[in-house]
Length: 262
Image (tube, rainbow, N blue to C red; front, side, top):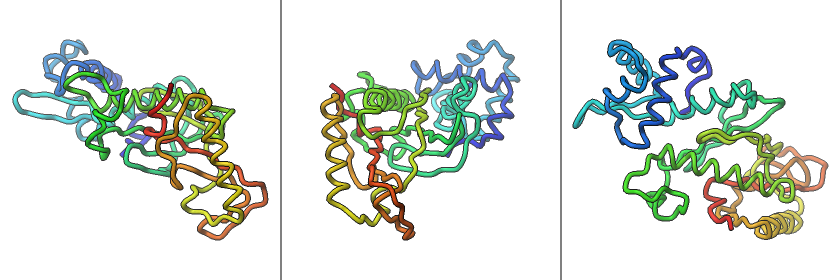
């Protein structure tokens, strides 16, 4: 669950400093010792404890008392750091409603220079148990923070979108930070929610895009009716509404879809 924008705006500078310190320290620790946080932030013990209690209450940090008092940044805190950075860079100005969710990501609509979509990668949250084995971008070490894996997955998707657009019908990549990718908002439903007026023409268009992606060096490893969307056109959605423009399938790349870039 992404933390509410109101909560993010109310964060104190000390709380932001603790989140950043946790992010850095989790490259070394599964649970960051309290002493390490105090040294990294140069804050008084009482201040660190107070700020941590608030961050835990807001779902940004998790506490573990065994075998020592340790703290970990969770997806709520990681999303928050990504949103703060993207806002400072002017990539987004407002976060909207959740518009999609999968095994490894959640997607919200948002505002940038216009309507955009922001996708938060969630590797390891409800994902496949074999992610470490099957994903070649996973760090080669015994302990892999899922936050780091999610950032690598987001970077990989952004690189693939940048490589493919506009040669392939994929969303326009706009920005990326940590586990978040900002892209153009797709005007149309997923294929799974459509009743096609000309299925053959739509299939041919999808296969042409898959072929173009392959020629550019990307294999879509998760192609399905859920990862393909249609702009308004030769299609009627599950609500029965139809449009007038020719069909233009838009391939929506999931985090696993870009697993083969060569």
